[in-house]
Amino acid sequence: MRVVVAGAAGMIGSHMTEYLLGRGDEVVAVDSFITGRPENLAHLEGREGYTFVEADVSMALPVEGHLDAICHLASPASPADFTTMPAEILRAGSLGTFNALELARERGARLLLASTSEVYGEPMVHPQPESYWGNVNTIGPRSCYDESKRFAEAAVSSFRRSFGIDTAIARIFNTYGPRMRVDDGRVVSNFVVQALSGEPITLYGDGSQTRSFCYVDDEVAGLVALLDSDHPGPVNIGNPVEFTVRQLAELVLELTGSDVPLELRPLPEDDPTQRRPDISLARDALGWEPHTSLRDGLGPTIKYFRSELDR
Ligand code: UDP
Image (cartoon, rainbow, N blue to C red; front, side, top):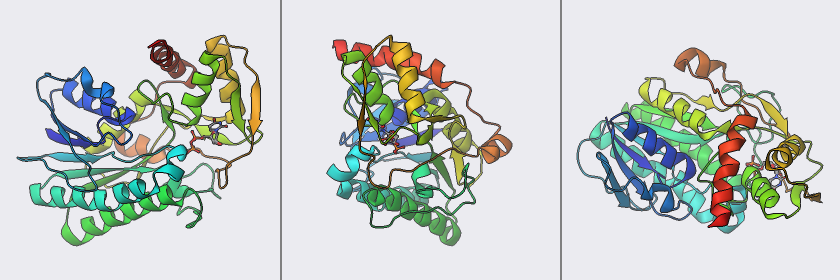
């Protein structure tokens, strides 16, 4: 296949690019480096089948030639970005999705949209199946991201219905692994970086809120399984094992051998109380499920952050 990966310099995008190249696909990697990092792709320069185009998907997707698939993974996605980059986030989900859809229509390519568990907002149904419509504050501090992705899902679904474009929607749940930004602001990178630098672990609220963490290799395998299928989604792609944020902090302390204290900070507004994917659909329709436990995935993640901090 010849595949465009928009957002290729991000954590998930770079692992996806590598995975597709590894199985013999051609990949046109696209990124604007707003949050993606050139270092995440540097090792792929010169590799057979790999080309890079620096572009902002919200402006244009300037890719020539035949295409089999387009993966739209481009967007700032950390809650820390919601206050500093709301316009970029809203544009990536709206204009970026339009540009990806237009390119898919023009080339007859399948479009995979990276949506998010954030479409469920503060979920009233637990765990969350794809049939749950969600509970989102449309004017709250997270709405730029939540509504951008909900709009993107609506655009993809409408274009599929009206213009017959081949599309797929993946709902990604908290994903972690090597190549996250040290200053990303999300919980796994914050806790690991704090533990390794001897700084207190910043626990928001009382740490009883839950998340379900998926290792990036599992996440990419799920996304590719969806891409290779003809399923339109939405399909939850995440790890269904749920942890409190306090349990994550304790595990990070254990695995880093650090004894820094926990420092309680106020819970951010609209921070979801619980989140866990129901992955029955992914299991049945794609034959996919994650295999990496949080303990096992944190090993290479800690190793990566250690080398980043040493640098
Ligand atoms: N969190 C925390 N300390 C941090 C960063 C995040 O306790 O330094 C909490 C946050 O309040 C949330 C959970 O960890 O309940 C996951 O936050 P993250 O920013 O990783 O992503 P989210 O799932 O909220 O999009």
